[in-house]
Length: 413
Image (cartoon, rainbow, N blue to C red; front, top):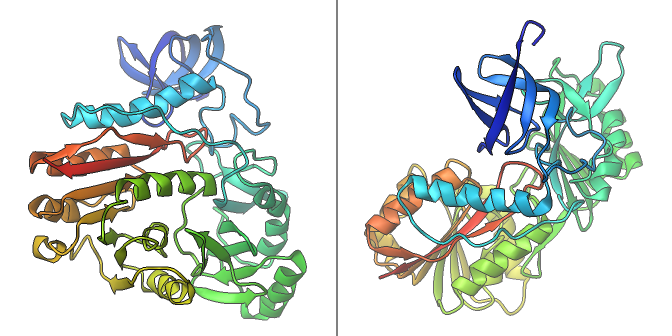
C-alpha cells in the first residue's frame, strides 16, 4: 500500500472475517487489527486499509499476548478483551441466523483456553537466503510468518515446529512451501505432508530423520512413510487409530463440549443416525446408550471407526455406511427408522441432506457446524418444515480467529 491514501475512519463493527468495518463516503473499508469504536488514521487502498495510527483506542483493546500477532495470519482478534471477543462469537451465530429470518436465542459462547489446539496446518517455506521458516501464512499472502512461539497450539506442536523444518529440508516444494497437517495424539505427533514431495533418493534419510525427531507417524499424502507408534485418540473413552489425514476436531476441550451438547440432546434416543460421522467423534459416545448408524464418505474413517467399535466393551451396535451425503443424501424414507439424527458437515454445510431431513418424520435433529452461514441456511429448511429450533450454543473452538463452532437442536413441533 505504498501509494495508499491516508484518511481518518471510525470503526463501527467487526465483520465476519474478523476485520474492523468502517463506513465512509467512499463505501465500506475493512481494517485488520482494529476494534469497534476506534478512530484510526489508515492507509487505504480500495476497500482495505492498514492502521497508521490509533487516534482513539477502544476501551476493550488489550495487549496481544503472542509475539507473532499482527504478522502471522493465524489469529486476528488477540487484541480484544475476552468478554467482548466472546460476545462477537455469540453475535456472529445470532446474526447469521437472523439473516435467514430465524429469531432464536443464542447462548453465550463456550470459551477455549490457549495452548489447546491439537490439530494445525503448518507451512514451511524457504526464504530468499535459503533458510527455512515454519509457521502460518501472513494475512492475504503466501508468505509464511514464523510462528514457533504460537500460543494457540498445544506445547507439543509448538515445540515440533523446528523439527518440521528439518523434515521439510528433505522435501521438494514450490515457492509457497511445504504444508503439514500435524495432530497431537496420546501416542505422539501424527504428521502428514500435503504440499511437498519426497524424492526416492531421500526416502531412507526421511525415515531415519522422522524416527530421530520422535514423530509417531509421518505420511506423504495417503502413503505412510514411517509409523513408530499408531496415532491414538479417544472418542467417548474408546481408543481410535486415526487414518492419515483424517478429520479430527481442532481442540480436545472443544470436542468434549460438543460431545456433551450432542449426547445430552439425544440421550433418550434408541436408534441414531450420525451423518458425516468421520471416525466416530459422536458415534462412539452415543453408542454407549443407543444403536448408531454412522454414515461418511471417507471409507478409511469408517474402517477406523469399525475397528474401534469392535474392540470396545459396553457399546450398543454400531453400523456404518460409506456414502457421499452431498451427492446421495439419506432419503426421508431411509430416515424413518431413526428417532434422532446428528449431522456434522464440512464448512459448505449439508443442503441436500437438510432438505431430505425436512421431509422426514425424525423427531429430533442435532446439527454441529463450523460455519454459521451454512448452519443458518440448513436450519431454515428444517424450521420451514415444522421443526422448532432450541437455543443455539456457540463453541469457541478456533481461538482468536473469526471462526466459531455451534450446536443447534431441532425438535418436531
